[in-house]
Image (cartoon, protein in one colour):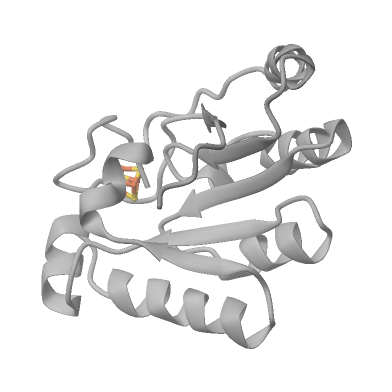
Length: 157
Ligand code: SF4
């Protein structure tokens, strides 16, 4: 059964190191603007008071957004369970965010088998990097999962 728990979805920015063929948000390397972190934290404080307890960060690639860690830490401090969806290209930043407790769960997005994934991502090696990231997280005992292509509507990554 699907969870009925409401989740606040935050697309911090459209900045991404990939330029995927299917990106519904037209994210890419030249979209460098990010939401202002104090503004976002003010909104989420209000939503927390209304009963929201879970938040998911995406984008763009959330780990590239200006203020990513500040936002994740701020949300955790507010009492949220913070998750994120990443393209899996930046394993060390993901590890840092999770090991410090700023992010409690990470999902890595996949578009299919290696050849198809790399074609859609327009990036050779993208599949291997994503797979390596999810393996590293799992081997580190961190909460993680994958987002298959059909679920990509919930996040740009
Ligand atoms: S689909 Fe995801 S990884 Fe691809 S450009 Fe968009 S945000 Fe970046």
